[in-house]
Image 1 (cartoon, helix red, strand yellow):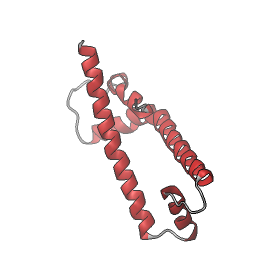
Image 2: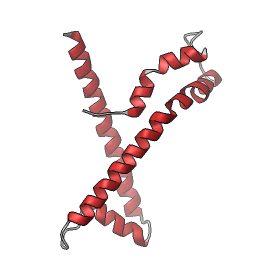
Image 3: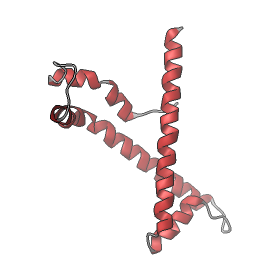
Image 4: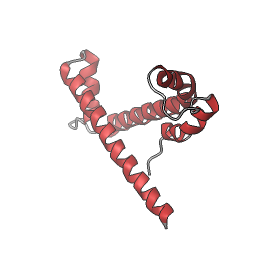
Length: 126
């Protein structure tokens, strides 16, 4: 099961836009779209975005600490290797590894959310 604080805020998007008066016309473009995002959506999403960021930071820090203290002297895991590389200087290898991890995380999260929404749709149909 995947929990997404941002997803909970986005699920109420239509309600936020209606309350802000931005859904009077069904089709808005350009400046109205940006204004709706900036004035209505972003303030309501802020708690979810902050919660998601703190949760991600806490989990990644926890993974590093557990790996750092439980690995043996001859074992070099990925988080420990990246940490040792960053201590000296940020190299292109660290940047590439970070970009790959972010891309992989986005792809896997997208797949998980799609599967979760399909499972929810199947459960509601029965």
